Length: 610
Image (cartoon, rainbow, N blue to C red; front, side, top):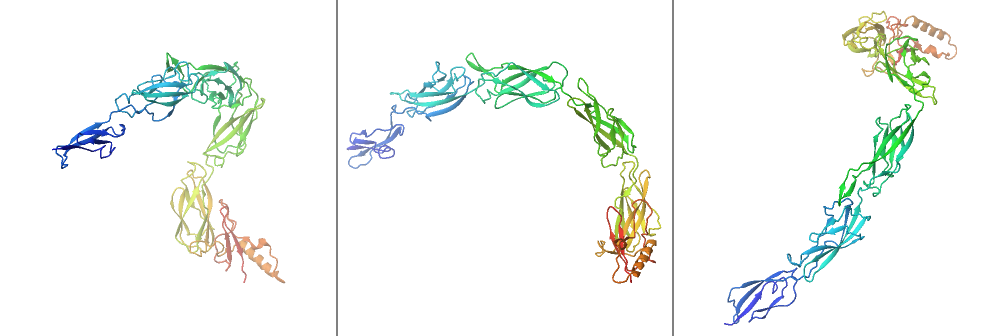
């Protein structure tokens, strides 16, 4: 039987690389390759071999699989992921720590010389005598060769080569740009060893002295910025020193007034260091070192000035009983001059809102000019505040201020009084209950609880009013029967806890209420009381009528606006009768009421003659 060979699969009649392999003579089984192949794209092909009958084409034996492996050649150079890298390195970077790592990859067969990469430093710019940076061949780690990478340069450019170990050897390069960030390897130094300062006593002042320093580190970096400290001489806390961020100078200020004590002067020891710790090269390695900061001396001369007098104590508390008469001595309040040579002092009242006190100009003795009243609106929580000035005769004159807190003990000099002494009641109201409230300007125990009494009066209607329950600062007032329209007074006697009292009246207006609950604001009709004054008014009206001749007579304004009822808030005699007398009233009569908070109502009556 005659046979022939067949091949099939990837590289023959399938993807990838179909048509790459073929049988030149199927009777002999020779396989031919028709073109070159990229191993990095397809490293191997799995090809199937079959034996078939030449006559029938039928497969006569089982298939054989052959793995065709493509042999690598060094046709790929190592490649960096980027052509250029930019990094920043601190000047005090430690030699043991890598600066950067470059890594290149080779597409040739792994584990062979064709893909094994070695790194080398081709060049560095600028080019010092000794290389500043080194590259580890096997890892691509870049390290510092010595203490400082700067060597006077702020940037370096490294050309790194990556080469394989194949034949022929292939390679590529990449550039690493390194920016050197300055570190603190130079200490700041004062431009002057000592300074002189004249400072006036008694004043606070900013920026009285500036201290300059030189620093060779890069400007506006933590390695350059200075920190100042007052090491000695500021035990009393008079000074503070801060850094001017724009000039790096130390700015000295006086934050607590200086005192001239007659001594020659005082000195401040001021040190300076950088924000970043100092580092230096030690046996080929950069190390952070504790270097003693540089110092300078500021010699200060305190200038004597005229100081203001000082009261002792600054706040004087006096306790007195209210009611002290004018001319009484309150006490003595004096000041001292802190200057080494004291000046003469005179005193004057600077603040006395109620004008209660006077001060003797040379002695500081205080006397009263008015009666002291604890209930004055100028007294707050029983305390009255007075300010006294002490003025010396120095050049220029200086003024010191002292405060007197005058605490006034209360005496029972105020009787209780009604808070609201006026009441309006609608006509026809009976068996009504009202609550009346009193107040006392005095303090405990000269104030409440109060005792309320009704005082009998010929002017007050009988059996109309009665007191109910007492609540301490108020009491119930019961209206037992209704009253006709008019104005009435209810006399009271209100006693405080010490039985100090004052007779007073509650003024009641009985009026017509159009809505049943509120007095008509303009007109109230009432029966008028005809007493002696009313009779005189009627006679005057008759005389006016008799004087009629032609037309209406001239009537003075005062005669047409008569006040029939006058009330007094104190327990004084009522000048005109306020209780309606039904026997003598004139009807009809219009009565207008003016009600104010500051005075009792006044009735204006206009007579209608028939």
